Image (cartoon, rainbow, N blue to C red; front, side):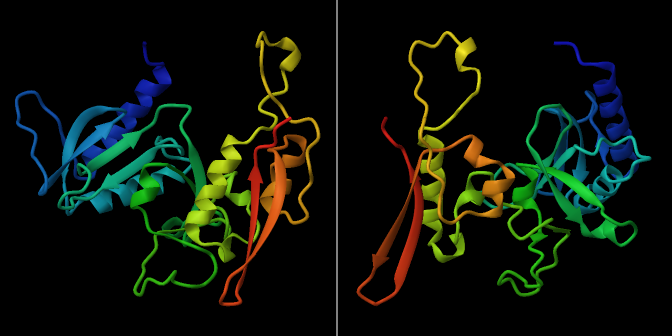
Length: 255
């Protein structure tokens, strides 16, 4: 597959920016420095250089500021995942991705928000695991001395489309919320609208969906009533301690 000219220009611009801010470009005649003192820098799967571990956080900050700057050549969807060195952890390095069709979501970048209003940065699935993102509720999330670099756009913005459908999820134990997400993905529903144009000989779908008594904002945002996910059930469990646990789950409805 041949890269488009825009992709080549993007990789060139990012490489020049990295080299100007502390990255040592890769060279066939030089040995690549190894962790933990140096971290490899990869762009779309290719090693383009290395950077001192102490300099890597500042380099990532420069990249993120350029991402939200409209005048910069750095694409706003660039994913910059800095994996630090940890004993027994994942292989450390600075992993950059600029290819299209990647999952991303918006967060508020606090550093640039001091300079401009609405500094929204799009982050990817790998980098968010190594970022410090706070919830906009005014708390510290139970972590004393927490110094976030980003903030969620809303209290439930970190949830997936499926996870945002569970009402009162904060009253459930976290494993039960995970079970609910898995059941919603497995349930019979409306996976597509092109039934009359398909050649499938057997494909199940639900004809008589049920509207839940309680629903979340995500339920209306994603118009789940138009694409039902199965039959809704509310189960009340009364424990011997007297504490009532309400579980709202969606399970597969056999037609």
